[in-house]
Length: 433
Image (cartoon, rainbow, N blue to C red; front, side):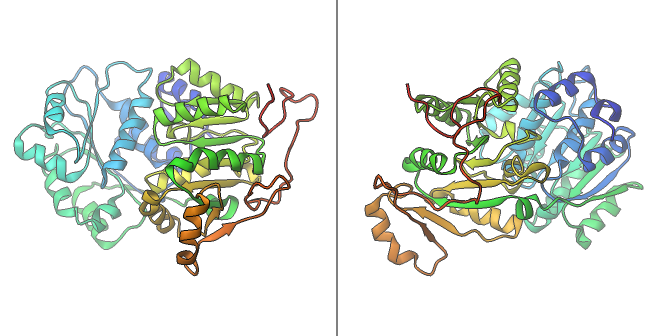
């Protein structure tokens, strides 16, 4: 199997990929990157979790002319969350590349700020249709110079009623542009769109691995924001993981949780965008070598981080899109091993939980750790209302009188490392000081 260098990705970007633990291209990347680099139109049928974002981002970066300040690539997405995610991915990939400028354009942002950004050099625009049309009508953006167009999650744009807007936007782009269409399904409207705007496209289909359903046991714990930290520490004591990744929504939350883990005596490190590349590489190296037991990370670590021996993934904060969830929990249960993914869900997270359930076609059973994830008084008030609604209670008394959750795995607790392993501290326990 070729590596990214052999596919035509420059050394600087390849170095960034390696620093993030991304070494081997996924099937969609292996098949799409060469075709895009050759200038072909591409229709890619691929589910979330196949690595499709890098399949179009990497070749686009290779084809950008930094000496030209015009907008050269446009990536259309149905939601601002996806626009943010792709924009962050691009900025990560150009960390060692000078000159490439990216702008995310979506609703909810300050229009004046976007207008100011658009006055400078902008090579890549990642946008949602509505806000982009707003800029087109204000004449604040010129798409006539766009030579690479990506329609990401095309079927979702269809379902959200964006195809008329997409049609109007495409008319604003360079007539001889290269067009790439990515979609999980191919309804007739999407096929008609492709036929209308694409020239002899190459059709690529890759099926996603069913890692979320078949290889990873998934557990959802009902809690509150105030109780999250105590719930996490309780679960760690119960599970005694060998290696675990804990995902937070923001850099600030990851940093604070990491500090709390250290204060409670756990061997932990942090991984997020505020760290230098050298610090990220150091954290990942220590984790791979099992010199630390816990890695507290934002989604920067979800993309391609492949570490043997990760037994648990904890979603301290629930991800806001299905693809991030798939990538996160895919960090465990690798190479045929067992894996457990635990997601902590507060009341405000329920919409995201339902979205994930729909996306992976699986219904979760929520557990409650009585007196831990929800205070006793709140639990007593809610218990009668939850009967018959799918919520279950994880109970059990320890000899010291504390409540404990039912084990989420048949794995025996790994209380202590065997001699000769990297480090000799007790795994999954606080160190006494």
